[in-house]
Image (cartoon, rainbow, N blue to C red; front, side, top):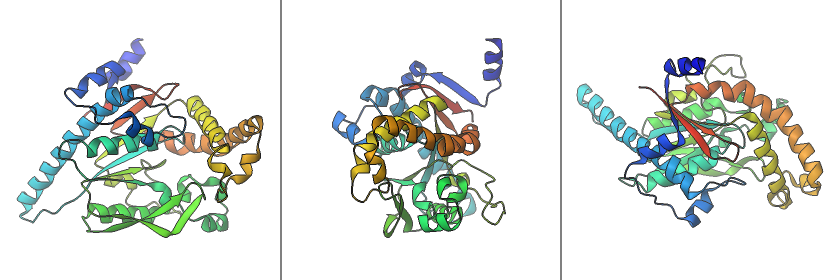
Length: 319
């Protein structure tokens, strides 16, 4: 107990239990209906309206305050420099393991911010679009390391963020299909100077990632973030959630004609557990331990999930 107190005393974070965090919503009003929330949930993620009210409303309130403060600081800098201010999006990064609920978190935050004070325009971008195409991954012999840092076109991602943060009128991002498990060459996501951009992905908080040339890039993805969130859970929970999601996909998306994983639709439930467990143990688990989890304490805010996806605690970095 004394060791825990000492650790928290010198922690760079302020720690909140669920009740303490929920109290910080103040007068924020829930603006999502059950129908709207249903459309935002990921597979097998039982996020309730109570969860939104207690966890995500306070977070949306905090983000709104930070966005306003950043805008004021931006304007003050231009007054000092004597230059004309132009619109630059506030960028929020969201990281975490496979199956931990990053995408659901990102969609809920997007929905709440868009319905919040000032009704800002919020674009959501996933780093999946910046994966190398399967053809390139196969040529490099890293197809089974999809999701590891070396499977991403980091230079392209950094250029994208640089263009967004420079206030370019229009910036294009590639699109990835989870169904076809590959980049869609004929699709593009166009970003047109939104107020806020949310970037969600496994490795967005990494620094010092070697490129294929062995060189360390002088600029990292996280350098462009104004605020960052890490969705955390014990690996045993994430592993179980991944297996449960695999089972659901086996009888839904995997059965579609164009699905890359259509062969898995023929598995029995018992066989599916074996296959999903193997994928986790060979790929997702090592990636989590080696590359994703070590970035946890680089985040400005950490959402700590319990066994059934509910957030049990929140840690906010001290200013």
